[in-house]
Image (cartoon, rainbow, N blue to C red; front, side, top):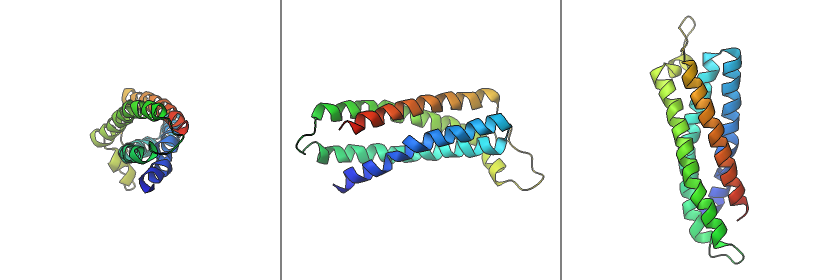
Length: 150
């Protein structure tokens, strides 16, 4: 039961984390703040890594849950089949955000001292991460809805 319980607890990380990171990124775009954009990119990268753990906890929890009475095997399969593409999109989003941080000095921007030049993230990359994040949020939300039906 512990692994299924851990999946139920940790699945809220991407469900809540991605929209929070989207808000931070939107604030960064609105205020033209490289610091906020870098913080959002760092959040997306971290959420991507944590989502891997959520996915594998779900795989382990499936073995326990499918043996319980009243649990539909078809519902579990539907949730599982949508979880993998959702994970892939979240990881693509995390990869794009990590690329932005590494390529354009975003980590340096977060750790900079007074007088250091902030990162200049290209607009196309910021918008690409935002679009990917919105898709990720929708897919994770649908995956959660399917999981809630279990």
